Image (cartoon, rainbow, N blue to C red; front, side):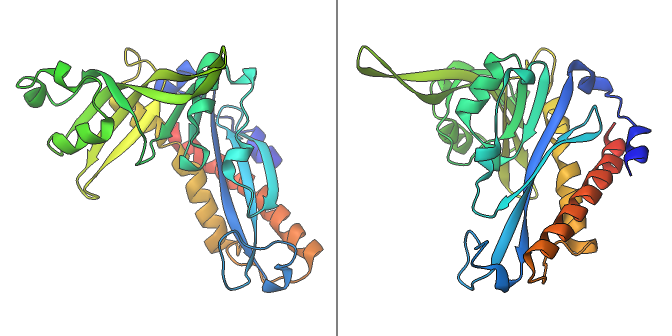
Length: 274
């Protein structure tokens, strides 16, 4: 499997060429035998079920697993979301499990980039409208929406099309001369109406609108599907969805061997995205 991976490196093309790397991270819960409940109790369960969690971080350019860790199910994904200066010129694509405005601000400060979904209860204020349906903006003064809450804006406008916005977000507080000062940052927010789901799909990013269109942001976020599909495949086809092994060492051996297979499967799957 290592030989197969090394002989088929990914070459970033198109909009992806702008980055040193595109990093995808995710986790998946592995349900264990109830015999292991005392060692690995489930996070939200009333039937004494047991579980572990695989945390995986993949690099699309090196076509390799950057990090894999097995923890108890109760370890939250956000605790595994570490930001270092190495993120410079790197794009991080994450789902809501890793959502953190403070971490997004850190990525931006280190010269990195991110694309993430937006929480439905996010308290954003609109600072500027970059683009939207021409027939709507032609009849409405865009300035009337400035400083309005994003949720109120999306409720008032017709439910169709897509909007490219600059929103002010609260990333935390700091004390200055014993006074608490709120810190805000402006980030780009993409809103796309999904007719099938009848709801807005929202993404937050620091990628510049001059270089990355709304469609580009959506396509970049689709890289996440590579890791999502592999986890589903492992659980359905490779018996990772429910382990009945009651012996702890054997359970770990099985999970670790599947993790290696996970690496190879994802490497093959990523080739179809470039």
